[in-house]
Length: 293
Image (tube, rainbow, N blue to C red; front, top):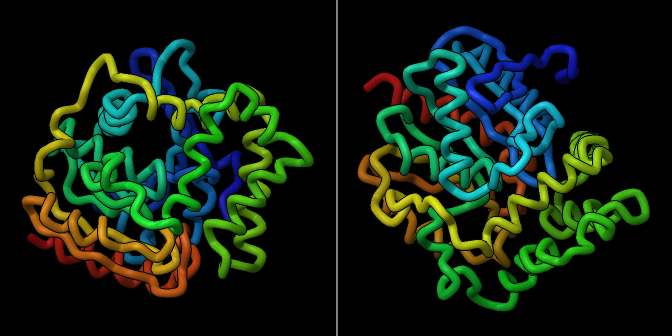
């Protein structure tokens, strides 16, 4: 279990990152997603530390008051610059980037922006963005059902709706996205998300990630339209996206270094948490393979 007192801040130019740093060895940066916090990586980070890796667990920008920058958007280039900026702030030449949900989008974007800074990526629950274009993203009623939150968060009342009844909407999301995930760890993750979003500015920041999806970017990230110059381990839940894994298979051709797909058959949108021992074993194997070359 991580406690907030173990987190620290680093600032470079106008951006502040709040992060947990532990262990020694090759660096692995683990980005959380929505609705979550970096604390959910505690057990995974501990296993990596014991295996000889340094782990860095940052809050996504907007998910902690210290990370907010007034007027700064959440377009793909900006969030990619966040990831590379964190490496700069910590004086890291490169690192393996792991990301769940929005964190997965961050690691894809960071690789497109600065592939020489990324040793490899482990995107969780999100395939390559090129496979998620509107004509490809919604394939079947199951996927459409799972993605309706994208429209919900465009509404001007979505902050108020999310806060209603002690953040009942977050409970709905956890239940919908991880129907087989139960237990104390799942409940703790939900509790921490509610605590983070109890700050109105943080809740607005988290929702602004979704609002940025429907805005034309002022600074596009063309590298995402090409095969990424890295190697990847993509992790998918067999019950996620309505059970449709086609985008992951299409994604495998979009990595110059090659990509494998690890499917957790009974997991939903949190496969790394729903079957954490399997994920940890696969991650450590992957790290040893790519860092030995």
